[in-house]
Figure 1 (cartoon, rainbow, N blue to C red):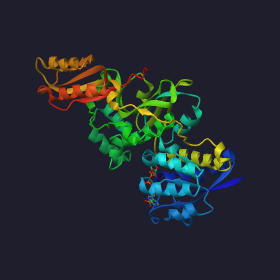
Figure 2: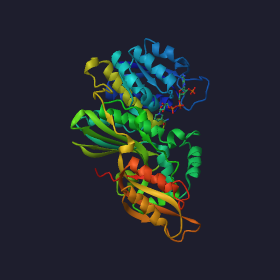
Figure 3: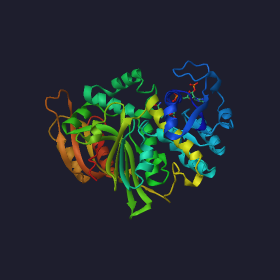
Figure 4: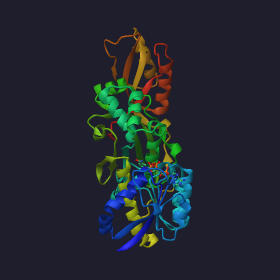
Length: 440
Ligand SMILES: NC(=O)c1ccc[n+]([C@@H]2O[C@H](COP(=O)([O-])OP(=O)(O)OC[C@H]3O[C@@H](n4cnc5c(N)ncnc54)[C@H](OP(=O)(O)O)[C@@H]3O)[C@@H](O)[C@H]2O)c1
């Protein structure tokens, strides 16, 4: 049996999970892959801290430089999180020609392109299965299992915190802030929740998937991002009436530019969308994640599972450790590199030009003529209305007015929204969400 030695840098939630799962299932994994995987270092910031997983003292340290430069260390696993220190750890390991595994989507999103180049330069690899959708092996699926396909669409529910909040709001009719506090108390949301609820974590994951699909490292600033803070129970209630639910979706549309896969056109966004209740993504509830993929050969496929958590994430990290162990004994050029940028360029469509149907909610004064003013603005911008609801028996000076409008380019739609917000009869900032039919 061949042996590989692994240094785990970061012994927190995921690092602890990796250590524990290797301790529990190491023999089975070795029987399956032919490698005995031994953890020779676990590096933390505070070696005296109380932990739920406690590796033997002699392998725990606070010096990552020592752990990765140990000549016995074959593979480095970066699980410290953050960007700067993680970048130094990954860069240093790659420079030493040691394969690196990371679950760090923030790092990949910002520095992925340069780290991939570095890995190539030093003829080693950077693996990142756990960086997208935790326990769902979606990176392997997109790179390997679906290699035969021109993939034109990916829609992902990639943030469990947002999905948990939206599911609870829809089921219980309670406000965003209340459910967020509850999620924080239960440990489903961070004390500082903006990375999740403002869509940035989903942006990192969507960018990584878009890069794999297009063969071009997509800069994160090119992704339109809108979080879930504006959503109210009334939006979910009326979406339900209309046959929809609201989900935070990372959307990737890939169109070949004049049929040339070397120069694709990519349309990307992370935003709350109205999803038809008949669509399979509408039933992905709670902290679960799902990635819906359309390929020209496979057709439609859905990948569903736990997007975070100690064990689910450890499962993906260990799959990368096994890949790295196998690759160590291959000729470098013969292994399927974890990411090979093959597209020469990519035209990333500005969100201003992306075309969609929208749901609009206005708080409007309940008096004759209000509707006429609203429809006049939409008509002037050539935006058609497909349905309109104003609930009866609503108390107060204003009433919610909900509209579903037909396909419009975002820059046109935005102008109409601005004008609607300036109407005297409209009393608060208009709220709007994209409506996705998944038809094209
Ligand atoms: N948690 C999840 O469900 C999940 C899911 C998917 C991906 N990820 C990604 O996995 C990575 C790790 O997340 P996590 O939840 O495991 O984080 P975590 O619980 O905060 O653990 C981080 C670990 O890194 C150690 N550390 C931090 N800075 C260090 C330094 N300079 N030198 C040595 N050790 C250092 C910490 O030491 P101390 O313990 O002494 O503080 C801790 O053990 C992140 O990139 C995250 O985005 C996490």
